[in-house]
Amino acid sequence: MAEARAADGTSLHWEERGSGPTVMLVPYWSMHPMVFEPLSTELAADSRVVRFDERGTGRSDRIGPYDVQTAADDLEAVCEAIGGAQVAVCLVGASNSAVRVANRRPDLLERVVCVGSAPFAVGALSSSESLIASRAVVDAILQQIETDYRGAIRSVLSGADSGFSDDEVRERVQLQADYSSGEAAAARARSWAADEGGLEHGRRLGPRLAVILTEAMGGDDQWFPAAREMQPIIEEAFPQAGVHWAANGIVTAATECAGIIRAVATSPAYDRQP
Image 1 (cartoon, helix red, strand yellow):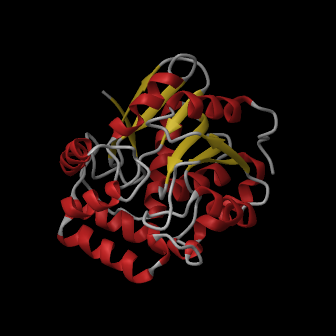
Image 2: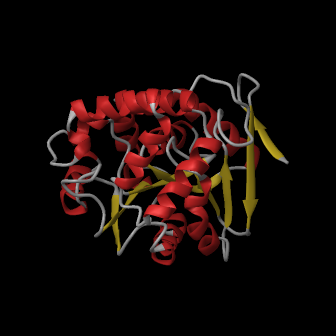
């Protein structure tokens, strides 16, 4: 079993498949690693694909703390153990830790691709019509994570651009509850919601930051804004970032998303320096 050691000695499990440029798949609080499986299969045809279990999840040590800065430190430790990565692929709050590492250690992590969002705190989307724009709604789901973890996972999956059927949602709720404790999930979600530093770290990456938006994502009754509403928010916050479009997300459009990630990982347009 491959493992990295965090600065405090916490053991972090990681695994790899394929060969070629290294693509790091960065986990976030409400996701079981199987969500990355279609994308992993596509990328592994010509890339080395690495994923890891954050502390408090899977086969890594079940030890806190679970804040954004610790997540960044742990990601750096894994990048060190694997010899660095050309690109990290992130969803939601994982972006906030990845941009920190890419800024301070470009030798270990060159570029960051965010799928469906960017390294924001929730307040950055307050002008939208999506659920996450409401502080009351966000506070309610954070409280639900702490008091009814399974229900919170179900709410997030049902209100996201997942493409999952009801049966698939139930399966993923069970997988996630087994994979991560409610304590770790709640702490991570609260830390991300309050994190104002990701915006500046993402901006400092300049053209080393890329975002994949999908036509089907978001909307008034979903957690995140519709992609056409999200695009100008991202372009204003991160004017040098590359914005790419896919028909759907990493589950239902894995081939298309993998092609974009390959391009970002190898294109001279994404220089190491802004």
